[in-house]
Length: 162
Image (cartoon, rainbow, N blue to C red; front, side, top):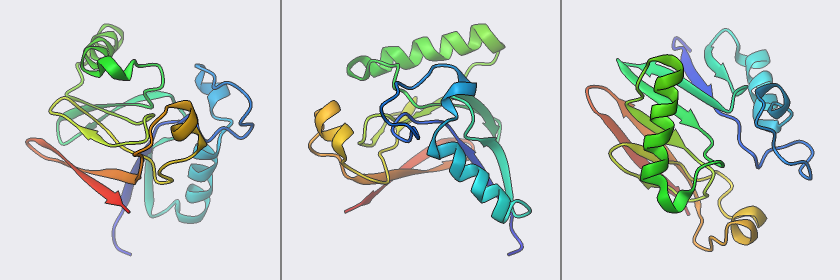
C-alpha cells in the first residue's frame, strides 16, 4: 500500500492456451496464451496499484527506464548457440525500425539464466519441464529469474530457486 508497481511483460511460447498450436509471430494471435490472461486478471484485481507498461501483449517491446532503452523479447527466434551475434542483429533491426538503439536486451526462452554486459536471459519460474528437457535438451534447468537494478549502469542478479 502506498506504492505503485510497474510491470512489463513479453509473451512466451510455453504458455499457449492450446499447447498443440505453433506460436504465431503476429502479436494479435500470440496473445491467446496464459501470460496475457494473467496480466488481464492482475489488472482487474490490482489495477489502481499497478502500472502496466505493457500488458504482455507483444512479442517484442522496448521500454525506457532511468534513461536506458531496454529491449525485451522472448528469444525463441534467436539462435542461442550464437547469442551475442543474434543480440547485435536484433538491436540493429530495432534501430532501423525505431531510430532508438537498445542499451540492453532481456530475453528468456532457454530455461536457464545467463547474464552478460549486453544482454541477459532469465530462466523460468517452473524450472525444468517437458519442453526444456525434451525440446531443448537442457537437463540442468532450475527455477530462476533475474532481478534488475537500472540506474547509471544495469545490474542483473540471478535468483535461483532450488
